[in-house]
Length: 460
Image (cartoon, rainbow, N blue to C red; front, side):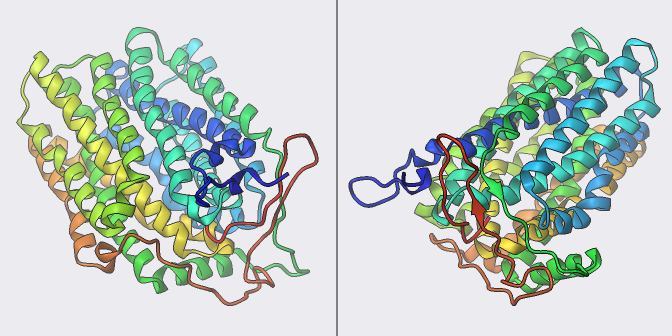
């Protein structure tokens, strides 16, 4: 039986639908969708519960968001080094179990009346830490499921599911906190992680991990290899800088935004959830466009224009006043544009990063970029809370939203903006102690009906 991912059309070109014939990819996509839905519901549920129910101050809200984002800074590099030597399926399954148990425990604590700010801080850190493992693992797993020429399409599918989660997750989290209770919201998040576990554990293809020597390389050496690879590649280095500029400013903007909507505009928790969820349909559109626009206009042109459009949308928010239908409609439109632009950037950047990175370096490259790009988000969240207390939410929102425009500025001044219609080639890396064959693990089938076998792809 030929592998599902190798199906071709009559013209000799890969069939567009062949990706969905791969049962293992479908299971990864289903599990990732459920996981993202639970994660996005939790990201809105915890801050809103702190603001609406616990009456948290701006500083406390900034602290809560910083604690939830701190694992990115503390763990990303280590997780990248570990995931390159682990089976990604096992990693994703275990993190789903951990997050389900953490939110389930929070639900029990809430029903007993013991879910206060300290409990929210502990929960935010636990879920954030496990999410770092899951996100690095699912990105590294894609290379073992799809061919190089399907990276954009595979990423588009996975990011499209994240778009759907961005639509339903914030609305669900906001509605549950506003209409029901935090324990019910926590329990719903646990349910989604449980569904993710049930889907991903059914992936049949068995991954082979790099052969381990008697004295395996120390984790710091593996981290250094990943850092050196990313810093030595002009495209990846630019991705790091642009991501860091955006994530720092966006973290500060989001903190102020979560204060601005319920307190300055007097919006209910449900309406706040809908405003945040507006990015979801836009992100879904961005995912669909990402499968077509880069091949037509060039990857660099798409990256810069989408970043300017999406990031610039938030500059209009400080001009809004009151809770009228016009204000709500404007928030929905701004969220939609921001979601479309951001998702178009996300999918395109991920495909570029995967294309230039060899298989054995995928986990560490993803973790290094995550570390640099997301590592500053705790500081951004703290800065947003500080600015809101000192200057007020409206002025602070304008300043932090303007900071988001640094990201497209970095792209314009770099070779990233000049990428053409074709993805760049992978840069070879010499053999290291990590792998005697340049770190390219093979992927094999598991015995069972409907399974296929194919060689590992050239990039993630």
